[in-house]
Length: 435
Image 1 (cartoon, rainbow, N blue to C red):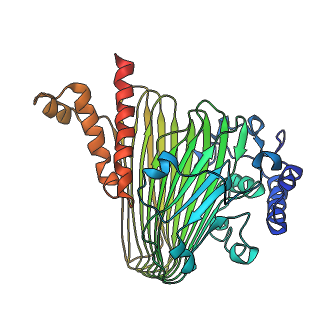
Image 2 (cartoon, rainbow, N blue to C red):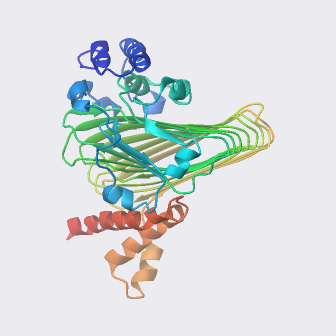
Image 3 (cartoon, rainbow, N blue to C red):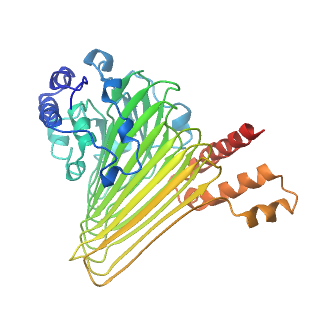
């Protein structure tokens, strides 16, 4: 990888604790031996990766990152308020935690919420990379080489966190790259909901290369919600990966509305017998946006279950790609796995690709996949219009109804109203362009 500023010297200059600097340098050395992926590779097929130019961006400097401050930095705002009552708040600016707070009763129960760069090595070093490291690519290596911080949530055995932990990510530097990281460790029998909201300044060219690791212990339940509302010149390359223990459960929901090019790789590995994984997503692209989703439901243990439902809409010249794989390994008997991707193409010039895949190595399983790509049903439009609903209102109602089964299943119900409003505004933008 040549002709860019993502060098070992730049990685070292970020500073931080010795263990984190050493980890970054090892990744930077590996990065120097790699080539950027191209769309000739199957996992990047239909993507915009050929347009990626690392020379357009530069890493943050230690001075730009500033000193993490858990006491005085402001946090909260509208994005946090929309989630309702919360148990904790983490504010991340350009990949670095600048504020965190946690209810006193959870502190007493041993729950940890802190910045990766400020946590003790004993608390975090063995966990960091233990999930994401099982699925590396060039962008995760780049992430590790310039990881300056991020949020760490640790829930001890048997502790139930009743209200959401909210993580707010903000990217604002023009021409910069940031590398947010969220690590959630839920020990045996624990329960936690983590809501992450991602946004960036409008009309600012920024690369966000993020990683989320979810370690779900035996009989633990993690609910994770990610809402992405980046500005129109932000490129986002993200990995969310979960490892599930025996009888563990993951409920994951992703909402993608913003960005220029936004790629999310969602993976769950069901290691323990009886583990369950539910993966949901809603995405809506307009203008020249591209939403790119790759999913992996990896059944390692027997008697596991996974269900995936991704729904998207595109208009103007926007495009979406969904490529999913269900893998059932030889010892994973008595598995149930489903995968469904549904797409609405609202205007000529927009497009959607849907590629579901199965790889089954066991012989006693129940497995299915389905995908659809098409316009709004004319019969539905006619039904509403024949009852006096204006055409533009009819289209809004149909699109909102299309997404409703996902919104109704969000683990943070308070989010449904603002997200419905965001979709409503996108459809409204379509009719403004037509008039």
